[in-house]
Length: 382
Image 1: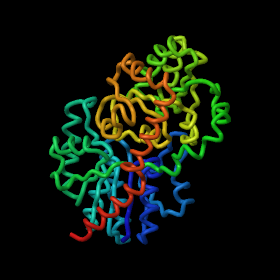
Image 2: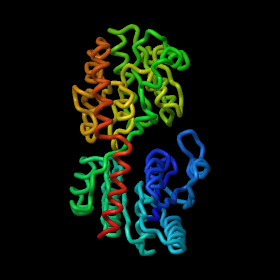
Image 3: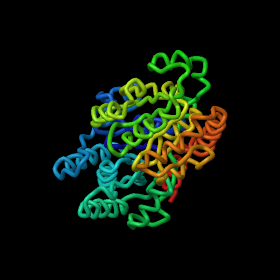
Image 4: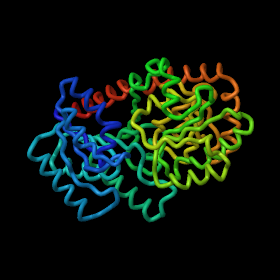
């Protein structure tokens, strides 16, 4: 089959579509990527990197927000590509590419159109009229595709509750983690050197998180929890990896809580598995999540995780076995959840091992790739 994989953001191509596209190529399918040429977290474009990996990349300029004229131009540009070259499957992800891609593919009479909703674009933080608009767009666009794939039962239930599509059309395919890349065994011999590189003490107990510095991630709650825990665990350090608009606010909060020297801000890094290997505990009090990839990556590295008791994190983490769930937004609850793990290295080790086992069994990348290939073939056979 000839397959087009499309998203609004090239960064999504790197994290999700590239592994899938590589799998499909190995199975003998022809794969073309389409995305906008947006900068990633570090400010660089991934389009040239995708091309260096051997992929043909179609650059389709797309705005993230609703913009009628640019959106129409994007539909026309993609339609022309699809008419010039016959595709058997168009697979879209991210909300904007999901709508533009499905319209263009339908007009070009592509036989199989599949949309992946990592999270539907309507949520409680939006105004009512915007929610109604997004729901209407998703309902209409769903009529143009054979199947909608989602990462979790939580997202599927939300799609059904808003009558986006029929139960038969919405399939759950959990996100896949590259467990070979996120393998703790690769980094054990370097543990002290990695900690030194990050500015961490070799004997410290380290809580950490990898996240964008935005309100949804709850990093303010994390810092408040660390301040509470520091009273009982004087050797505690905290490592925050990432960047974003709240960077200076979080630094100021850290100082106000008396955490200077205890909390380290490493900035944006690409060596995430190496960073995770330096942690004793991964804690991130997110206020909402699409799937929880960051938690699953930490679990794959045998790092115990503490997360908010929200969907879909309760599908990824088995509370008390592969991690601990705490009340969202409650710094004291997160501190209480962390205390037994910080006090007991053996408990951390056992929970970390159970966490990696769960990822290998449920969220391994090859499982996801094979599931998508089966879905494409099933849709093509109808």
